[in-house]
Length: 579
Image 1 (cartoon, one colour):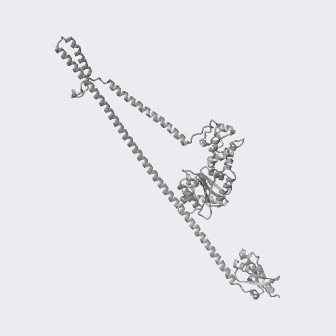
Image 2 (cartoon, one colour):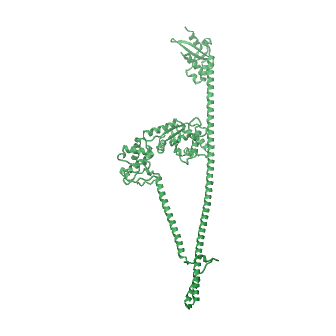
Image 3 (cartoon, rainbow, N blue to C red):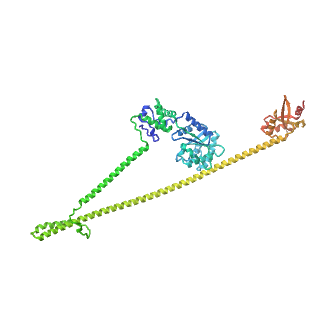
């Protein structure tokens, strides 16, 4: 096998030295990421990336990127962080059991060169102007969380609560993208803060087909220095893609396996779980055999000891044991007894004079010697039995004491573990209660802000409606107070008036008057020009042109759009009276 020794290397995706040499590759193509850091991108991946960008810019505040493990979600998110462009600023992070929302927002504040406070709400309040500054420059902030299904539920809820708090005004300042397994979508309702309604969008990452798998493997081989032809035919690619279920992360091992099998000396590694089981069985068997050997040796030693004891035991005679009555048990010096018996036997021949008395004495000595030997044997047997019983009793007491000590130690350890577990559970409950209170506080504040914003919007709408109604009423009042068409004919000919608008459509002239709410007097008169009837709106009466000009300057800009015309009343009267 190749001598790559990196801890992060996928060893199941390594090629043997023979396979590397056959393909003339400079380094492992599948076990590690490409040296230049470039990732695989084809038309489908680019389209998926564009969909994510579009969803972040104009979609819902929450975006889910779903797919099974090894389907390429992480690669796609890396591309998003690299190619997000000017419109999106990504804050990327990988999920784990140690993920902390507070640490994430702290990092964001540090990126804006702000000193982060310790309280989460204060962090969010500090973030709002930073994100608003980005929005003013047409840039949207986006948190991109990979492996979201590895994050504790409480932290995900805290993250979504923080996003709702930041977006509680009319302006969207932050969006969140979560990448996870397909079944993660079912957990979304459980993650939302109580009472919150959060629409979301989702993008499913589809498995590779045979064509995309071939393109992906060719990309990895090219990055590793492949100079020759692509080493797989269509059938091999179909088999590799089927083994990997179309997942890029699984293609590495499947492709490496196919290439390594071309090496006749290659022996596939056992799966880790089988290797561990085999080692466990081997170690366990050795230990079992070693333990059994020790027991056999111990048993043999005990047997030899007892055999020696019985072999060294003095021999008995044929006299039945019931002929002796044990009055007192004590240690007997058999040496003196044996010497006395021997002396008696030695003197018997000397004293023998063919007498019956001599023969009787000899028999008496012989009987005494036998009795002494039997008593010694019995005493030795009793002593041996007492020693054995004492040893067994001491052994039993030692075993009992050891058992009691072990049980006491086990009980103490169990009590310690139970106390630690109770402490952990209480700490977890306290932390959960604290987080829940904090989430409820954030949700309540977000709801209060939303309610206030809604009430403000309703008040503004109501004010606009009232203003429009007032304007309409004023316009109608102007129309109701409109002077008669002959009003200009009865005025002093030496005065001046202002012609505000003229048109062949009387309605448009009336609409002009209604929009601009000109104070009385106002009059619309008609006249003929080039065979068409015209309608002119005149406003006010002035003693001089200068007075009329000053009044025009005070008019709103909308009233001056048709370039008001100062006219002498007498000239208008003459034009209207002419045949």
